Length: 371
Image (cartoon, rainbow, N blue to C red):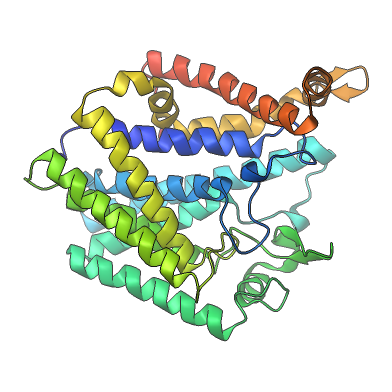
């Protein structure tokens, strides 16, 4: 059985996602970015679009290996789940609030964005934790995933969900529930700003399905079969998810901003295939030490996300002449390297390296920060 064995490959998958998130969230210049390091404007899929769903899927898998709480009393379980969810949501809000204060010097709650990456993880974790407490069998969980994705697909088709406009049902529901002042501002191709949150409330429904998919896969992994057979079975499932999502994308486009059902299928397929390669390499062939940087990132993923989100903003308070330190360093790179996109990418990679130093120190001291 694998429930008692720590999966190095799961830390690697989380680490890959976290290193990717740090890289794409911290370029040297937002005006000079290589296309693969940008999100799709609307329909489509870039490597950057894989980063967040990889982490979402890995969170679901990790939940499947943390089943001790399922045997606790209902009240104890709910307290633990609610505590984690609320803390994650509050940390996400604080990151947004602190970032706004550092950028503008203002604490403006009337225009504070409510949702975000950690807030979406919080709500998805809460929903899946409640589902798996109630639903025990894998076939029933699979039915729940299909029902969530099918129902969301129907909402998108009936509510102009594939239109990049203010009339999109995703934008309408989020405006109604959260208020326009508390949403992310996107820009249409013609430059018109609209309140459209890529981590909004309605589009969290398919994210819940993706976390549950990860949970199901971890449950399928915890059987008495030999490890190579379990890895192969999940590789087949990953390939089927990927192929099915690509085929269905002709009717339901791949779209991160609305987290379309096919986006869930394709990114889950990629994540599962990536995990199977890592599992073969690290857990089967016992070569995990060669992937130490990913393991270090994955062992303290949320702490590193918070650190990476704050550190660069705090460094911006340090001035070199009239320029913030990060901007001055980017300008130095831009003067040394052939083009500004390369300078921007190198800046991001160096920042990932700085965050790795923190990950290394935490890992070597056996400090694993968890909620």
